[in-house]
Image 1 (cartoon, rainbow, N blue to C red):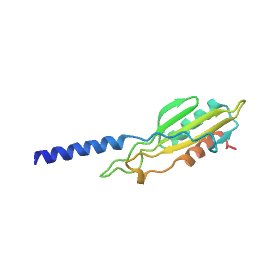
Image 2 (image 1 turned 90 degrees about the horizontal axis):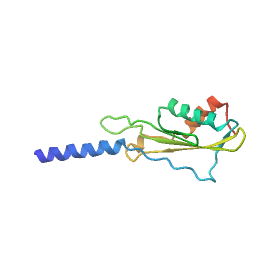
Image 3 (image 1 turned 45 degrees about the horizontal axis):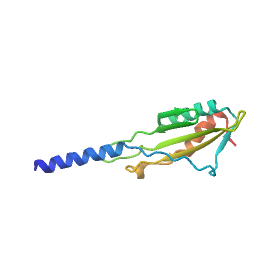
Length: 133
């Protein structure tokens, strides 16, 4: 009986640890479509940070050419929504033009309740930067 309870507690602990893990977004290939803003890279990077935060992401990395954030899992009896990690890659095209690629990764647990946030992140960036090409 005690061993059975200990095993159940250990399994529950492992499930919680796995649920906390996030997937890592994959950089879209160079041939993948990107959007272009007529703004310098620093302004676009700030807009990416703001858009992620506005969509409930906690910023994990904020570098000149890459921003990453993760949404916390919503825990209950089962792992629910949240757990997604989004990456925003920036590339200066010279002058005041910056190319952007966005990718959302879903974690293994909670996959069903997760969603792709690419459009919402781009919409948030558009809102602060005035649209893209």
